[in-house]
Amino acid sequence: HEHKQPFPENFLWGSASAAYQIEGGWDQDGKGPSVWDVYTKQPGTTYMDTNGDIAVDHYNRMEEDVALMAEMGLKTYRFSIAWTRIYPEGRGEVNEAGLAFYERLIDLLLDNHIEPIITVYHWDLPQALMDEYGGWESRKIIDDFNDYCVTLFQRFGEKVKYWVTLNEQNVFIGLGYKVGLHPPGVKDEKRMHQANHIASLANAKAVESFRKYVPNGKVGPSFALSPVYPRTSHPEDVLAAENAEEMMNHWYMDVYVHGKYPEVIWAHLERKGTAPELQEGDLELLKQGAPDFMGINYYQSTTVERNPLDGVAEGKMNTTGKKGTSSDSGVPGLFKTCRNPDLTTTNWDWEIDPVGLRIGMRRIHNRYQLPILISENGLGEFDKLENGRIHDDYRIDYIASHLQQIQEALQDGVDVIGYCTWSFTDLLSWLNGYQKRYGFVYIDRDEKDVRNLRRIKKDSFYWYQDIIQSSGEKL
Ligand code: BG6
Image (cartoon, rainbow, N blue to C red; front, side, top):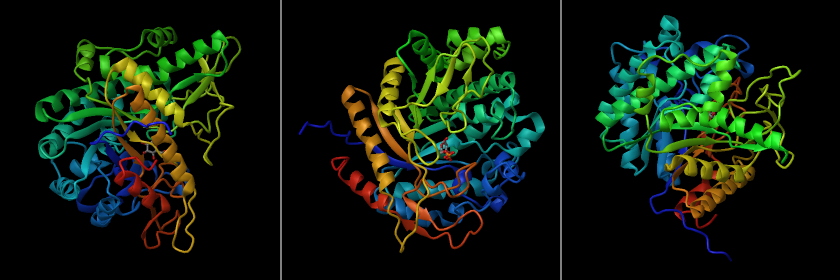
């Protein structure tokens, strides 16, 4: 038996969630509407028109949920704060009831020796800021986002060490402004790159403030990582994979870490007239945004082949790491995504690739020399409640195989500080309703019927409890 590298003693064994997907209480205690509260109520935007008005009612069942985390032995819990609970209109008067809710959550976690990781932005932009100036498309958001962050830093900075700024900037910008499936439902590449640039500036400014208000804390983004492979060893396919790595991954991570955009893609966008417009001082500000760790959300890799310019229609660019709908996607002249014949898929057509996580972590380690926090990884499936039990052995296999690759990466010399599964309880999958379940804890509800929202531990709950207790020895 080969000797396996043990996980570090202070490894953060964790799980994660996001406000809109679990809280419900969408207008309770002074909360204002977010873009998701509004978007999901337009017919046809989500699976069976489901929304997060009630979600899994975590807002009113927080104590019960934390008790389950404590029972499991979680070392860390990553959750997001709803901007509209703190500033119902996005700015202006602060809503004390919102701050008090998160303070109760943080205190309860700390009492149970669970390290809180706060995500300040997991997509639920205040609708008021969208109405007033178009949200991420206006530079006005830089100050409003900063003020919101500073309020959180001042209030929670003493208690909370780990902070995530933007959750999956590449996904909310790509799906919001290019693919058009998330709010605000725009399909315009030029606007997408501009909104993305402004989001990067807002991120950098928040990190700059973080240094001042939380000098002993650690901050980073959660980036949706999808490492890219060439379909064949044909040099044109290998080049296409390089192009896709630059556009899908380095385009964002280079900005976070070094405050600069990769040249290959910049030149490409300039030729197309879709490059973001830089103002004086932008590059200086971006350089203030360097993170302490790279948070990565990993679900699958991407495989590409060459996509010559002549005669190819432009497909959807896969900025999301989420395929399924985008097997013909790509960028003419750069790359075209395709199926990886060596991988199987989930029931949602996502390719299962644990080794891809190791590859991605090694690439990040080599390029950026930063510690890595896996801030999300997990399997969305149709779970079945049978005689009060959920036998989700497929989820156990999925998580185990990814943890084994993390262990390999540790052996490779990668500095991995923690691993958060997606998700702790079942929750609302933005566009897929409640049937796509990710949790260790089953929630008894479906799209049509909220039922009793009872919490039921799945087989994977007991399995992960055992893994944490043995520090990964039992993997
Ligand atoms: C990530 C998000 O993109 O993937 C989560 O940060 C999301 O909020 C998760 O739920 C799974 O995606 P989906 O589409 O299956 O809910």
